[in-house]
Image (cartoon, rainbow over all chains, first blue to last red; front, side, top):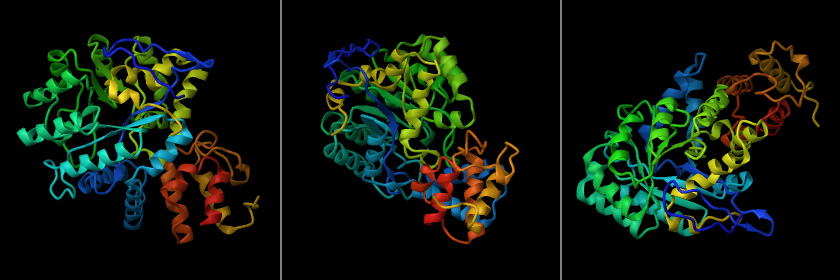
Length: 340
Length: 84
C-alpha cells in the first residue's frame, strides 16, 4: 500500500490511481480524526465532563465505587502519550496514516497543564518520529496576533498540514477573527476540520451545528472544510451542506456509536443515496472509542459495508483514504505509506 | 481450554452474561464461541455493567482498557478473568 501519488491540489478533484506491480495503488487507509491520548494534552476538565456524560447515559444506577471505577477505566484511555499503542493498532488495522488534531483548551479551561505552544511541539515531535502521522494545528482565535503567529509557524515551519477548530471552547467557525487563519489555509491549500455536535459536559454546545460553518465555506470557496463527526452527528443538515458546497466534507468519526446503536447502515444509505461518497472521510476519534473496540475492529466494521453491498469498492476506497488525499496539501501526501 | 463451568467466577460470568443478554438464554445455553454483542445482544452500555458486576463479585480489578478491547466472545471474557 505504499507509493502514493501526487494528485491535483484542487480540493474536489478526483484522485487518480496508478497501477504498479498489478496492485491497486489507490488503496490506502487514512484516519482523519485522532488525538494524542495524554492526560497532559487533553484537559482534565474535558475528561471530567466526558466521564460524567458516559455515566449519566448508563441505563443502570452506579454506586460510588462503580463511578470511581468507570473514571479509572476511562482515564486509562489517555495513557498513550507517545502514540505507540496507536501505531501498533494502526499496523494491525492497516491504517497507513492518522491525522493528530490539536485542541486548544487553554482559554476555555483553567489549569491546562501545557501551553498551546508546548502542545504543538508535542505534535511536532511525533511528526519527526514517524511519517505515519499528520497533524492539524488549533489555536483559539481569541489569542490574537500571538496565536496567529503560532498557527503560521506550525503550518509553515513545523509540518502541520491542516487546521482544527473546536467551537465548544467558545467561538464560532464563522467568527471573523478566524478569517486571517482561513487566508493562510487558502494560500497553503490546507483543509480546516471543525468539530460538530455535542461534546464533554463541561463545554457549551453552541456553535457546534453545521450551519455555523456555512459563512466561512462561502467566503473561502478554495478552502476545504471538514465537518468533524458530521457524517453521523447532525448528519442530515451536514449532508445538505456537503451536497451544495463543493468545499464541505464530512468526517465519519463517532460512527462507532452509530454502529452500537444499529443506526450506521441507515446513515450510510442516507449519504450514498445523495451521492456523497466523495465527501465522506474515514475517522475514528482515537482514543475516545478505545473502550468499545480497537482500530482493527473499526476498520473491519466499516469495510464490511462493502461486502454487505452497502458501499461499492470505489466509494469504499475513496472514503477510506482517497477523499482525504485529494484535499491534503502536497507535503501531507508525500509521507503517506504503510509499513514503515 | 479451561472448562468454564468448573470455576465459580467463570460460572458467575456465565450467569451474569445470561442475565444481561437480551436473547433470553439460560446460562447453560451460552457457548464459548458466542459473540457478546452479535450473538448475546450485550450492547456497549450493558457491557460496562457486565464488567462492573464481575469485578464487584470477585472483589478485584480484572479489566483494563487493552483487555476490554480484545473481548469479543464469551470465551474471550473467560480468558481475561482467568488471567487476572
